[in-house]
Length: 125
Image (cartoon, rainbow, N blue to C red; front, side, top):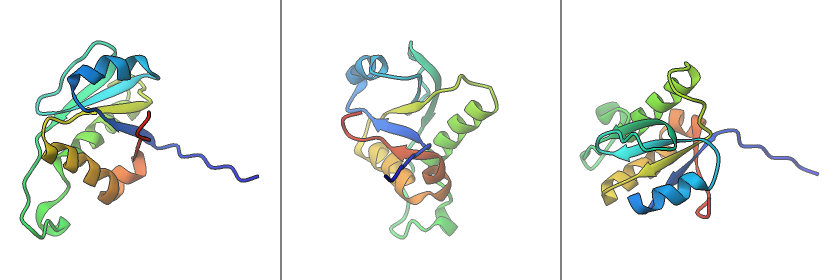
């Protein structure tokens, strides 16, 4: 028998704000990451926000650095481990634009630090 455990924090991208109450009711303690200003929604333990950054075509790390979404996820993680926020077990993301959704998806896939701490949650989660 093979065991597999992925201890990274699952990240769920929501379709819109109307999906937030259902997502919060569906599980464990959650943090909220919103495109734009941080939103302190009832039922969330921590909140942060980000503004997508449009990069040049190359978008290389040496020129662009880490994305705003990656930095926001980093702030949430640091607040969690340093005790500045409650111990959330998942992150719900409220993207407003396609660019915001893409930035979070790319941070999960391409940013090494983000990928070490977070993972994309299954679509049904």
